Each structure stands twice: as structure tokens, then as C-alpha cells.
Length: 615
Ligand code: BES
Ligand code: ZN
Figure 1: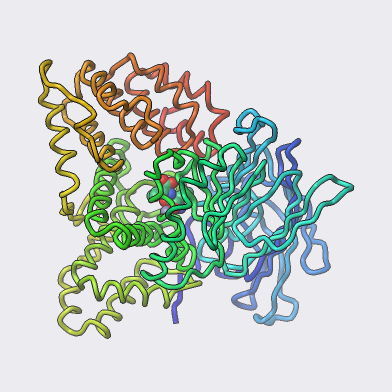
Figure 2: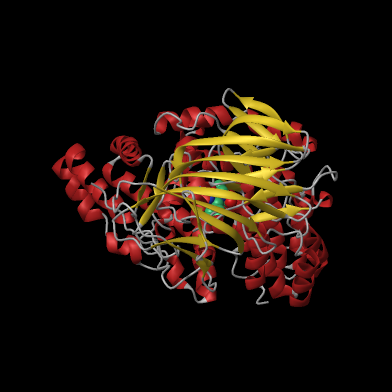
């Protein structure tokens, strides 16, 4: 039997006393007041008979009333808040003293203007300019600011939701029915998520949404204006991604796989909300060059959504595995060379993250298993480390036991832990036992010899990560970097330099230029943009890297353009590094720019940039 730890350093709930087995949300979206009001009913099972209270996570919520079964509870209390929110204490002893009972707690609540899970957009911030828009982002610990719950990935439960809104609603669930209420003018949307999910995967969006089919089990949702372009961007690959993932792991378990393209302030590239991946509009670049993000979010349908990290300390089991599967999808569709190239770009991201943490004096976050005890905010620990160090460990295991065995192991692991949660130690022992049984003595010994688990789990920095990936596709990028580095006035450049390049190659080339120990001269930076049309690129991956090169060279002609661009994207991957670089070039402009655009950003992004700028 698998006994997972009953504590999660990022939750205030008394997880060793109760487990949520189901929850039902009944919500009304109030665009006027910018709040969501409603009721959550939690079905809770005690783990022993001596329970005295139910403690739930909340953050910036107004709690109106609580009932347990048919009885009102008046003596509930809310703790003073800390970084993890405020614990809601509901006194309760078991009447029957039977563990096998389920207690139904029903809580009426509303969100407040401080809610960190929701962004409310005025019509001006939508593409249609006619209607407001609302969306949520709950990972890692923001679900507690949307509804009271056991906000921990160690607890998984199916849910239903009924949401009333004047505008179409989507959720991380299957839509079951819709009805219009003439009295209120609101439409009621009903949803059901039959598979058990952790709280961080609850998601909601409401706005002027249109939809189009992009595959036999997939629909694309977006504001009407972006519908055609978004449909084109993803219709070619989505179903093939699903099929390739199915043959890598197992049948797709969630029935439908839809994508919602959000307004530009969405703070991530993508978020793997079950049945409904949320994605940034920066993916819609008109050349399908960012579809790998969809492969990534889809891969979470297995790693993360079926097999879930038990706490945010074991986040690499979600993200490292997802990057591994994403690259297996890439391999299946475009060959090993493509996978190697993606791993190489990933390695560069890992190096950058380690450098960044070193600069901030936070090397403890470069561990594969960080220590989040002491109310640390998981958002502060977020970086490429769990993604790329996690991938590197799995790749190292693959190299050690061989690709054939790794393929089998992947299937066995996801079969064993589906619908469950897992930590790093259980992962290790499952791997070791599985290899002993299925790989024989020799491979088993090789595994023991090759993998220094202490080091992989706890060492800081790059540690055992092997940067040795095939560089076939990278050679041209390195050569062109060198040419720019060594160029003088007589060296000529043209679009031919990058003819037939993959978008990823341009990205790697710019990464390398940005990493030169002596930044390029201003005149080279100017020439660089002109040679390859970089400043008019529709690919944010390219544009943001060009700006990084320019800012590192302190080319002041570009500052204003960069500042304006910061008001058009809210994806933290682009916004945060750009603010940090702009601060180093022109602190006053960086702060002024943030003041100008802070209402545009999602609350999570706003908080992080504030920290980055030292405000
Ligand atoms: N689950 C993450 C996004 C996330 C992580 C949100 C932690 C909140 C806290 C998602 O799957 C992700 O990794 N997105 C990446 C995509 C990329 C790795 C392809 C992103 O947003 O850039
Ligand atoms: Zn991910």
C-alpha cells in the first residue's frame, strides 16, 4: 500500500484528519461587483474518530455562513493571514464515532477584490471591447482564494459545478447542460468532472467566447475575433499529439481535450486544466511555431492530472515528467533530432534559472526537491529547475536502462499511479523495484551504480545534469553567434543566414547572443534586427529574446519600444525577465512602466514583478 504523507507544507488544512471525497460548486459571476459568490459543498471523510475540527484553506475570502449536514455552525473562526492565507476553523466532533461516515460541509462565501486566483478584465482589455472577461489561475495555491477547500495536491476528488453568468462559461470539466433564466438574465452552465482532481486544477473562465472544432475530441475556444487564426494554429497538430501521447503512455482518460485562448494578460504559456487547457494568445503566432506548448499541456493529462505530485516540493514529478513526455511526443512526430534540440534549449533555460537564483541568493530553490516548509510561497520557488532538472533525471534513467525498458517503465508507472498522488521517494522505490523485476540483475545494478539519488534530489545548482545533447541542429546557431561576435564593419549579414531555420534555432541563436560575456555593441544590435526583421516578429519567443540582447547591450534606442511591448503581454516568462533587464538599464523607466501597466497584469504577475523590481 502507498502511504503518502498527510502533510503538505503549503496547506493550512488538517489533512491528517479529513480527506475531501467530492465537492460541488454553485457559483454566480458578478461582473458588476467583480466578485464570485456562491456555495461550496465538501464531502469529507474522517481518517480517525477523534477529530475535533475541520480546518480549510482560504485566502481573502468572505465567509458568510456554514452548515454541516442540516445544522448551522456559528462558531467558526478565521485565523490571521500569513503567506499561505488564513485557516478557516470549523469545530466538529463525530457524532457516531464512525470513520466510515461522510460529513457534508456547506459554505456560503464570496471572493473579494484581493482574490489572487481571478483576473477581471474590463471590456477595454478584451479584443472585442464589448464585454468584460473573467478567468482563473489556481496553480499552485490560489484555489483557496476562489473557494474554501483542502488546497493541496495530495487530496483529489471529482467535482460538479453550476455557474450563473451573463456570458458563456468554460471550466476544467465536461459541460453537462445549459439553461437560460429569464428572471435574472443569466445563463446557468452545469459541469461535471468525473475523475478525481486536486484543487489546483479547478478552473473557470467567462467572457464573449466562441468555439470551433479542431479535432475529433477537441474544440478551440476564444473571443470571436481570434477564432479563425487560433483554429488554424492548432487544428493541424492537436489530435496527432493526443494519438502520439496515447501510444507513449495509455489511452486519453478525460474524453475531450479543448483549448481556451485567453486575453494577453494570462500569466502563463499554458495551464493544463483538465478538459480545457488555458493558453496565452502569444502562442498564436501565425506559423504554428509554438504548438509544443500544447504538446506540453496535453502531456499533463497523464503527468500531473492523472498522476499528481503530492506537494509542491515534488513538483518535478509533474513538470519534469511532462517535459519528458512532451519531448517523446516531439520524437514520435519529428524524430530524435528534434527531441535532442528541444532538450538543448531546455538545458539553456536551466542554466539561466540557476544563474538567476544565484544572483538572488536563493540557491536552495535550485534543488530538485526544494524545502517549502516555513510558509514559503511556491510561486517564489517557480523556475525551469523542476522542468529541466526533472527532465534531465528521467533522461539519465532512460540512458541507464535503455530506451526499450524506459518505454515500458513509462507505461507501468502511469498505470500504477493513475488517479493517485506520488512523492519522489515512492517514485524512486517503484523504479528500483520495477527495474529489478523487469530489467534483470545487471540493469538493476547499473541503475544503483549510475544514479546518485541524494545528489539528484538535494544538490544545488546544475549538479549531475549532463548537457550532452546532440548538436546537429544547433551547430548553425553557434556558428552564426560566432560570426556576429567577431564581425567588424565589413561583415555582411542577410536573411539568407537563417534561411530554412526552425523557429527554435532562431531562439537558440538569440539565447547564445544574449549569453556572450561581452554584450554586442549598439550598432550590431541595431544591425541584427534589420538583418532578420526581428523587431516585427510575431513570435514572442523571438521578440523577447531580441529585446534581451538589446537590453544587455544597453541600446537605449529600444527602451521605449520595450516599455510599450510590456503593456501588450502578461505572460510571466516574458514579462519578468524583461522587467529585470529594463531595471538594470533604466530603473526609473522600469518602475514607471510597471506603474503604467500594473492594472493590465494578472494579480500573480503583478506581485512577482513587484518583487523583481524591489518595490
Ligand atoms: N502547470 C504549468 C504552469 C504553472 C506552473 C502554473 C506552476 C502555475 C504554477 C504549465 O504546464 C507550464 O509548465 N506551462 C509552461 C509551458 C511550457 C513549459 C511549454 C509555460 O507557461 O511557459
Ligand atoms: Zn507544465
